[in-house]
Amino acid sequence: MAQSTLDSGEDKLVIRLLHKIAAVGNKLPEPTTLFFMIAGAVIVASAIFAGFVVDDVMMPTEDGDYVKQSVQVQSLLTHEGIQWMYLSAVDNFVTFAPLGPVLMVMLGIGIAERTGLIATGLKMMVMSVPDNWITATLVFACVMSSIAADAGYVVMIPLGGLLFAGLGRHPMAGIAAAFAGVSAGFSANLSLTGLDPMLAELTNEAASIRDPQYEVMVTANYYFLVVSTFLVTAVCTIVTHRIVEPMLGEWDSSQASEPIEEPEMPSKDERRNVWCALGVAGLVTGFIAFLGIWPLSPLRDLTLLGVESSWLDDLQPYFSRFDVLLTLLFFLPGLVYGILQGSITGDGDVVEMANETMATMGAYVVLAFPAGQFIAYFDWSNLDIAVAEVGVQVLTAVGADSMPIVLLIAFIIVSGIINLIIGSASAKWAVMAPAFVPMLMGMGLSPELVQAGYRVADSVTNIITPLMSYLPIIIVFARKYVKDIQIGTLLTLMLPYSVALGIAWTVMLIIWLWLGVPIGPGAEAFYP
Image (cartoon, rainbow, N blue to C red; front, side, top):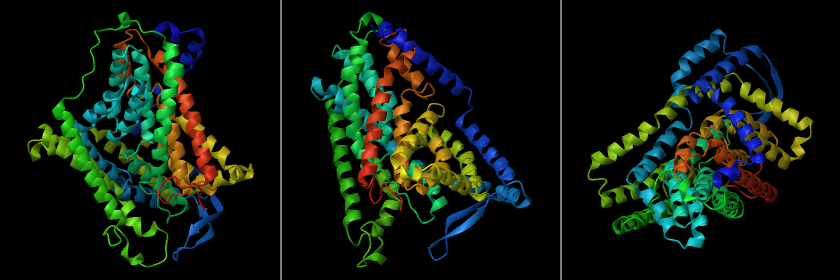
């Protein structure tokens, strides 16, 4: 039985450890409050370390070259510093790098989600394959669900339980496989998602501390995302079949808290409308590709036409604002599906769906205010440069600059530990990026590779942190099949996925680092 198997003596130690982590994490304030506190800490730290000088910092000159200079920490508690904080507060908020791109991309994704296109398409994908391909298809669909931000948690996870129960398999195995796929999917997809512009902008700001001319594009991790999609699908499928289902054993339907219904295939009209929307998505994708391939495209830098340069240089405008094209890629198919399905009967419906989407982003907008202040304070005071350079000098002193693989593994482990306490991917990266990105750039790792390492750590530990925001609703889904299941039991069930994904993904990144191949368009693994 699920309960007796999972609550065996050897698992109770893990459960107790997870509960202790939960107890620590629950004492932390909300992310917004946390950012206000961190911003305040930066103000105090700038006063304490005012006058601290870091020598031999590579700083850019007006002509684009770099020279070694000394950088001094400035206090924010001086007359000049206080005046600057007062005058720049609004600008720090509205220029918070991820704010605009994320809100815009979410407009497109929100239309595709609220018309029902994404949920129906995912159900079609999972329910139209042979039984022996169900697990792999379910995980793949869960990975792809990150296109719709958090929708996979409320659509795919209950669907996983229903599918497995309908096949006579333990429904908790379906929930576990779906949970692992959805969480890991935020760092794996065949398409760019709303998370990509958010993280890229934060990474770009952090990279500019060391190299103001460096640009991290929205597509920074695209090749990594595509390969990771198949890696995550394979690993989660193997773990489900070889570890989780044998651990669960046979399912006793008397454990269910309510009668279990068979999952229903979308209607013929819904399936037809999805295919029409996918046809539109194909046309939009073709148009986007054409804008990048056409030599005279308005999204290419024509000043470089005929000039010998990198293949990516004249595509800089195209990739720099790829979030605009990404918005269209979701908005237009969602619009077509909504019109065909009848969920959109006029422009008022589109506006209402957009309003609802933005309403769900309210917490993010509020978070952006203190996060923007923190990043601006960190930059103005020169604490960012000081922390990064001191870190580089320490790592160099212990020989870490000659061990990039060890450095990458250590960073992934540290990021994973932090994720057990702070859940939000963007909130964590807003805090971590200004310190880690320039520091690891100094060790020779590219910002794109550092961002990829962070995404791995965030994804593999999301499924075992008690502070995961969707954990309560997942427990509700699970109790439909095992009425007395507890959080510790569920998290113990997810441990094999976390460990297997962490090992496999880290090995893949190490191979990527060893080969030195681009991790995205124009994004090398090493920083020159």
